[in-house]
Amino acid sequence: MSVKQISVFLENKPGMLNQLTAELAKSGVNMRALSLAETKDFGIARIIADDTLGAMNALKEAGFVASLTPVLAFEIPNEAGGLNKLLGIITDANVNVEYMYSCLSPRGNSEAVMIFRVANTQASESALQARGLWSLTQEEI
Amino acid sequence: MERYYQPEIECAPREEIVRMQNEKLVKQIRRVWDVVPYYRKKMQEKGVTPDDIKSIDDIHKLPFLSKADLREAYPYGLLAKPLKDCVRIQSTSGTTGKRVVAFYTQHDIDLWEECCARAIVAAGGTNEDVCQVSYGYGLFTGGPGLNGGSHKVGCLTVPTSSGNTERQIMFIMDLQATILCCTPSYAAYLGETMKEMGYGPDDIPLKAGIFGAEAWSEEMRRDIEKTLGIKAYDIYGLTEISGPGVSFECSEQHGMHINEDHFYAEIIDPDTGEVLPEGQQGELVFTCLDKEAFPMIRYRTRDICVLTREKCSCGRTHVRMRKPQGRTDDMLIIRGVNVFPSQIETVLLNQGYAPNYQIVVDRVNNTDTLEVLVEMTPEMFTDNLGDIADRQAKLGAGLLSMLGIKAKVSLVAPKSITRSEGKAVRVIDRRKI
Image 1 (tube, chains in turn green, blue):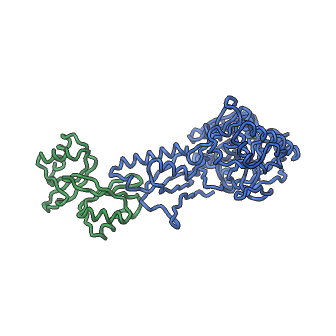
Image 2: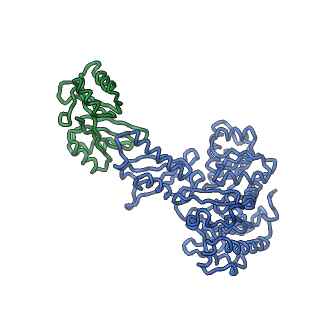
Image 3: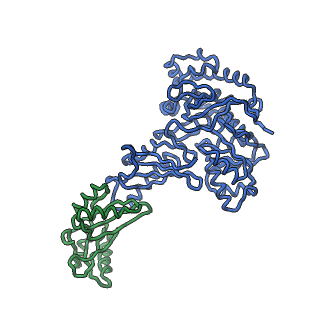
């Protein structure tokens, strides 16, 4: 089960991210996870929100260009080698990781959640689940 | 002591010039009527025949030719000589992506190069000089024109073309170049660079510069003259008429003498087309009196300027034009290249963008910069930085091939481009000229 990530275009100038968070705050959207990717003159904010639809509507109305991207969310043990194990499985499946970021597990168990985009979502997901890793659904996260 | 390349022509008495113009115009009009159906049709539409053209005073009876005609007749519609007699083309970027292609017979090349030679001699050039031509060579007329002129004068010609500043400076110093031909912004840039390298005006062997193909101010002239230790001369021209050397400055640096034995100039009211009396400001119109392959007749340049036939102390009798005060349309001259916003729009639309763009022209270190701001749209946006960067690069490549100069493409937030009264401001020119 993939999770819907909101990707937002941000021009690289002061105050752009602030405008984005202001819109989300105004509509009562809580961000579960956030990652920023940038080039020299623009960036992309990647967001997992508790209310994806509400967030999308608010952003579009405010004039942002945003789209939804399917990403995977897997819980990993909060200990040395936790991420390494996950990546080992993805490597064995011969899948390329495009980007990755993390947030706290919503279960309050002090475990970490890795959110990532891969070239082949389905193959990675089955491989990870087959090895007993815990994937999170949109509702869980 | 003023020197001339062709004193018998450049300093001819006014009546001799007019006699020459009468004779050439009558012949030229009869010829284009006979061999160019496009001209004949235009003349017929205006109810004029070659019999109505008895002297230069009748020129106002002839129809105008505009950039739109060039587009319509592209590429061969205005050709007045068989292709087998043509030996060269030169070209400029044109509106809506269609370039202006001008044809030359050997005669046309010779007269063009002679005009450039007159400019070089007026700037003090002799066969003892080393003339470095740092205008672009190729389709652009700057390099080939001055190169030919320099040969005619007998200068040792250094055809560096544009770019590679380090090498330019090396040649200036090692070969002791005395005359530099390039755009004024590049001259200023060379000057600044040489200053940074520790060369003062007395160390630099240059004595004169012939600068044109873009707008520049008196202030910029003084700056360049000071840093390079030279006298800087303005030169004017356009591909349609031949190239640089349509007019040039003499030692007086007070208006450019038009080579009116070849190019007859008029000033018209751009709205009514009426010919304006001497001294009044209006649109500059040229007629090629004796060019063979591509003889523009009453071609509207869209340059706004003033003519004077007042006697010049340099001894030349040819009419002078003031530096053009602007354009009647929205054309930009960036690094000596004509750029129209419509060309940029064409590239955007071709690549599937909305025409939400802004052109920012600036001058950084005395070199023109062109930036095209494009608003991000939902259609363009993907979550992948690489894909967006690829699209950006593709747009940059499209602009380069359309305009012939490099443009920086910047993606900006939607609806962020300044709009005044609902209309987008298309061009921001920050250059201080």
